[in-house]
Amino acid sequence: MDRMNWTDIEFILQGLSEYPRVEKLLFVMCLMMYLVILLGNSTLIILTLVDSHLRTPMYFFLGNLSFLDIWYTSSFIPSMLIHFLSQKKTISFTRCVVQMSVSYTMGSTECVLLAVMAYDRYVAICNPLRYSIIISKALCIQMAALSWGLGFLNSLTETILAIRLPFCGKNVINHFACEILAFVKLACTDISLNEIIIMLGNVIFLFSPLLLICISYIFILSTVLRINSAEGRKKAFSTCSAHLTVVTVFYGTILFMYMKPKSKDSAFNKLIALFYGVVTPMLNPIIYSLRNTEVHGAMRKLMTRQWFWRKG
Image (cartoon, rainbow, N blue to C red; front, side, top):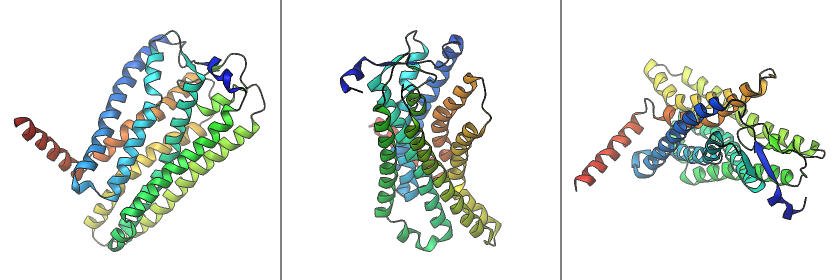
């Protein structure tokens, strides 16, 4: 396809156009959740930067996760909110590609990052005496860079293959946002290669990290069960409970979308995808802050510092 023609192509994001009242309700709900996402994740990032007690590998990776969630949701929620209240639900080819590539980069990166965080918890519980030696600052930066690099390369590969496709006819995407599989299915040519690459990417970036996470927690569980005191076991479990909850919510939603029986109710399928895209990033900072004395202590210190600063 000639690059000069890209500016002439527009896509229609169908969303729930047939249910205008539902869209107005979703506008209010998604706006509130987006504000919570921005506030919660921004607060966690600030706390990990300003509080010395949170400058540990776990909170370094958590800061990356929060930064990722902000970028992921910001790639599609603002335009989605506009479309909820607009009669014209079109998006240009360029904006669609950018939206698709950014969200895909963030999704792929999060899968790898959750596996990296599982490895961090494995070393912390199974090899605590050598934790600071093994999980050094240099290794943290390298693992975070690897997560972002792999996510970017996966998105870049699939985006380049997608934008080379020719499009014709009505470019209606039956979704709230530009999603890569829905995007390539609109092409008026054979998309077998794209579907194979997307499937391979899903297997590599969804199930390979999940396998590593499961292996890490098998070793963690084995180590915890060998601890004699109940208090010691409780403390060990508490250090990884937040990460395990985030993984359960993240992969639970994805596996439900992929493994549930195909439904003729496309509206239900779209709402499930919306839950994955909006609710999961909103829950992450809440889960990591709930019953976390270190985060609570950092928050109190930050608020006290601001109060003294205002007093002059």
